[in-house]
Amino acid sequence: MPDNPQKQPSDEVDENQIQQSKTEGEAYQTSVSYMANTVAHDGGKKQAGEYVVGYAQEEAEGMYELVDEGEFEFVEPDDENCHLEVVVADAGDKRFVPDCGVSATLERDGEEHGPFDLQFLWHPGVYHYGSNVELPDSGEYDLHVTVEPPTFMRHDEQNGDRYGETVEVTFESVDVETGQG
Image (cartoon, rainbow, N blue to C red; front, side):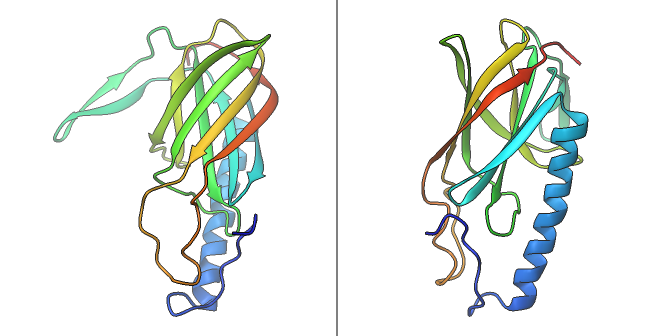
């Protein structure tokens, strides 16, 4: 597949649907930019093969966890002091790609922290993968993100053979601010 796979009209999708996908992707990327550039302490994104991979870093935060049918528990961070968020989007239409295996390692002065598995996180503003993690302190780290291909089925004989390769992305000099929010 090319590095920026554009969808073509086929038996499964017409020009109108392709444009709707691009419109959804533009809206998603607006939310991603807001999260990474306004809400988070640090953030960025870059293209990697068939994906656009981005990150945002914040202080560790509490989240709801489903413990039983209809029963939630709000779980505060223990020793975790960094909330790491990663977005994975289609390089062509920029929409969120679900069901990927995402992990991240932070590295500084030759010392690695991780890898951390980043699970899908529902957020009222923007879908992403993420986790609260523990780091020794604030400062600049290199962030290594690995995205493994999703296992979901793909429609369309012409456009469906995408997201089949693992990609690795490095963001250098990420300014991490530790703490709990």
